[in-house]
Length: 495
View 1 (spheres, rainbow, N blue to C red):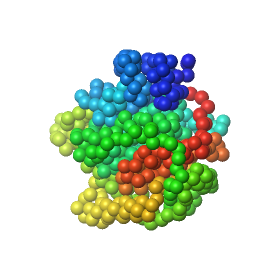
View 2: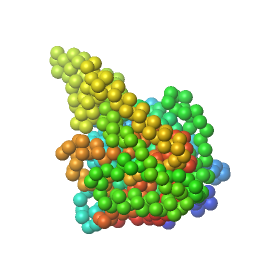
View 3: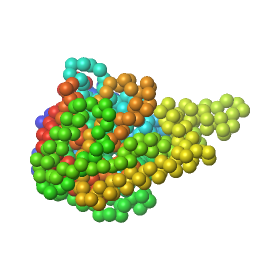
View 4: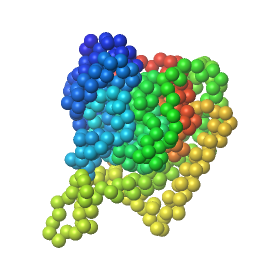
């Protein structure tokens, strides 16, 4: 079998347990696929020696009857996760040469479960971006094309390398992080599944921080079943992260029955945006009909503070970023600017940060510093925090009324061309997060499921938002939607 890299986690797990394939064979198939996919620029630090070593170890475990579902599964790891002895740059020039002496909790959990790391994946610098165009490694490229048009398309951001790699079958799955939609939007743009769990479900320890009250890790996979399997291995209580929830991790996969009879699905009227493409409207209506046909009750709901979500997010996230990124100053690790005679510590800070940070990161740090400054703290930051509380209450109110999940579009459009939006107008780019940021502000679980293609043949996704800590129930609703949509499209290989 030469196409082992195209398997899902569930298929590979079953073959590994049956002794039909080895982890080493799976790993070699993925390494070969990565070698010939340079045009996608998805993998930025390859770790074939580590992968082969881990695969050998996984094979030994499997021979002893280890039945951990992730044992022997080759993964890509987003460059935001610290991996011991392997470059972990957050796609930024300021962390050039940084090799952590420790492992992030999420990657450690995956390795403990027997997973194999193929390498580190491209992303937007410090996870700030919606198109993977702010990376020090250059743009990641979407494996999908518009018909016969050769325009390079964005895989979305910030987890663009993860999305591209999974969609192109360079790995069986990948880790992502989501601060305002950075798992769900790229998943929708590349026709894969991505879940952001409840804030606190996955440890943030060892993940380079962007906005600490919003960041959350999650899996990016080829199916809902794979997302359930991988999420189970990633999460768990971590005393090293003060926001980590001390809750038992259920068997998410066992909860995938596909039975959603009697579930109540909310359709928020505020997500019907002016100028929303007709294809997105149609997809949303089709998804609603699919869930209704599967036995769910559909109910119109209101989330009245939705229109304030983007402005609130783009005050809170940069504020937290400006605080988190203050540690990159050229003193302890990473890049340090060359100094001239007479330069003092202030010049070292200024030159290092000017050289090391890209334009988008600089923009957000300046916005964040401004909204936290003495004269504007109350006018902007405190007001945004109050709005966030109202947005969270909107969701609490609809869940209290018996809503089990909320269905919305995942993105306002299909993937756009690289360079079409980046520098022209940053606000236009920020609007890509319009359907996703509310979920982060409220700390809720959200999942993007591929549900169809647009008229140019590009994937479109739908988003389901669940109750806090009920990822199992959310995954089951997503599973029912996936079954009904019957989405099986793959990008035609050009790379």
